Amino acid sequence: MRLKFAAVGFDPSHVQSEEPGNVLASEDHEKRSFKLSARVVAFCVAHKLHLAACSIGAAWAWSGLLHTDLRPWDAVVIATTVLCVYQWNRLTDVSEDRLNCPLELESAIQNSRSIRIFCLGTATLAVTLPMLTSQPGKGVVVGICLILGFLYGTPLLFGKRLKDIPVLKNLSSGFGWALLTVVYPSIRMSSWDFEVWLAFGYMLTAVVMVEMTWDIRDVNGDRGAGVRSIPVAFGIQTTESLISGLNSLTGVLLVAFLLEGRLSNAWGLVLLNFGLMQMSSAVIRTHTELRRPWSHTLIVLQSALLFGLGAVAR
Image (cartoon, rainbow, N blue to C red):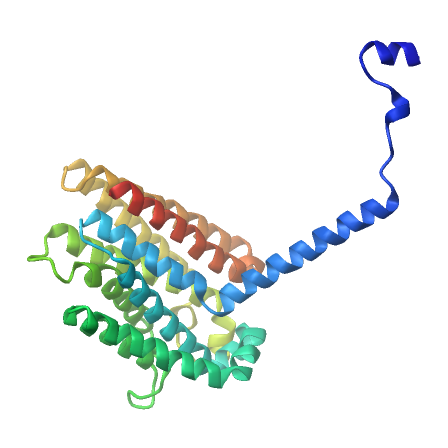
């Protein structure tokens, strides 16, 4: 048998079995790598870095489709605005987060002083940077977004937060994101054409759909905290129907405008979000245990889509 193996250049005597110690070391290394990756992901989610990336991706995509400039300092302003708003919300969503994400709430409470300082610093930077670069209109847009974000989580309007008011909760978020990612890059355009308004409407609607997805995810905590989100007020099934209806409507309109030749071919990539939202509806309907991780995965996938769309559109 040795001669037969040698004829094909293989000698079984040279084969060494992997020692048990090496196997254990390899498994231990894999476990440490997995734990490190999990900690990195948890850090990004807790500190809303994936949302900041998504905002930059959205501004990059819409500025490409609308042929407007997006400079590096614009990306800094947009990301810091989003981080400021969502970090502030970590301090104001106490009652609902106690049920929805207790570990994130515990971290926010422990670091509340740092979060307040961070929000003050990022808000100041986001408003002043456009002024320093002779872009006061952009500073106004950022200011409006920050005020919306503050009112969203802080009870000032008749003792209520914007998020306590059904439908307005979702519309205010969509309006803020559309302002920041569509209007902000387009503020210096001499006139706003059909494509600008379409981009604004689509971005607003897309964020409303994502917000409703999050509301389904957080329905138990919202109900317990007295937050009348759409799923709490009208039921999860109605919310799923609304998401599906809005997704279908925007998809049909985009296809119609593309066929009419009113949009460039790059707009066709926006339809990929239709597929993502259809997938999202299926996940949140059939896998309740995956609603929270899927909500973050959806943002990551949409961010990748937006960055790709921006690159193709240029």
